[in-house]
Image (cartoon, rainbow, N blue to C red; front, top):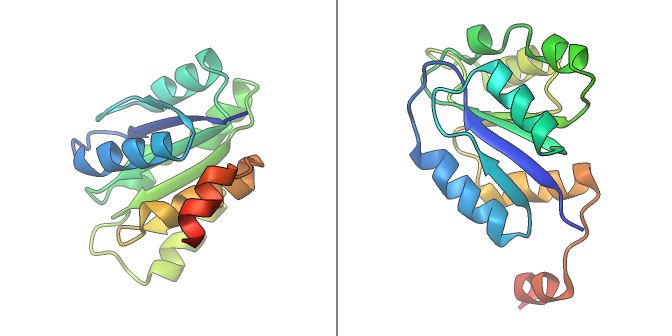
Length: 146
């Protein structure tokens, strides 16, 4: 059984290349992907999670204003009675300070995992499989070990 992933770019950010690559990689890895596209609101993520019974929410942001865009996000998810795994990744802060500090700030905001803009899709996929208890298929294990 595969997990359903809600993917999108939050706020006023219009960067689409990264989520397109991630959508393709997640689909190839066996996940059901609902791609909200760019300039998605918190409510759109919540509505899609509810409508598609999302197991995970992956928020992307490259324009550096993710902290403002994500304020109150986890409270709104909780108020909706949802409990998906939540990830965020990209260039999350203007002038990206020490990434460890950025990671800590987003973890404090409630995100389960925080990735920088240099993260490879395979790293996020491995984490997602672990966090959603999705086992790799025999074919995928064979491909990865050959």
